[in-house]
Amino acid sequence: MEEVDSAVTNQHPFWPRHLSIPNYVANDRSMEEILAFLFSVSGVLLLGTWVLTGKDMEGGRLTTMRRLILCWFAVCGFIHGVIEGWFSLYYPLIPSDQSFLSQLWKEYSKGDSRYVIADNFTVCMETVTAWMWGPLSVWTILAFLYNHPHRFVLQLIVSLGQLYGAVLYFYTEHRDGYIHSELGHPIYFWFYFIFMNTLWIVIPLLLIVDAWMQLSDAQAHFDRSGAGKEKTKEE
Image (cartoon, rainbow, N blue to C red):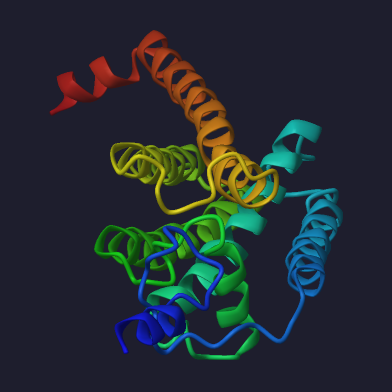
């Protein structure tokens, strides 16, 4: 009887293979369908943001680099707010649910099974990401479009949060010995787990440096102008 139960509970594609997911229902959509949806929506958002940011803004035309950065934040807003937002709300149901976004998460879980077992760290991290960095990514876009003075502060805050979350994401799995994926698999490990998440280390790190430089230049200009000293004397 124990052998039968073990065979039943192991009828899933996740690692480690001994995971017990008794309510698991296999996807009825293919990997190609799921990835096509993800990259198609991301592509539409990239194109739409690129066109939008090419117009004259309140502070003048945005540079090519700044437009690309806003395209990045548009994709972040979608992935954090919609995809990760779905996980934060429905993570207990995902193993058995056949909604499209639940199937997307079951597909991704082949590269990191912590999502299909509702690992505590993953749930907490994704909930913060969805409800903080998702809306703030959209706010960052608007701040640049309308040339708000806090635009680089938002870029710095969001990028720091993304970098911190990604580092913890990798580090916690490293301490677990990479047991939640088929180590070395070209798609599930290297593409899903490594490549797709490394983007949220490399790009936020570059944007942190950019925001640091912009804010430092602004502070230096303010200091040189003597405005701070004059205000202190008036007070």
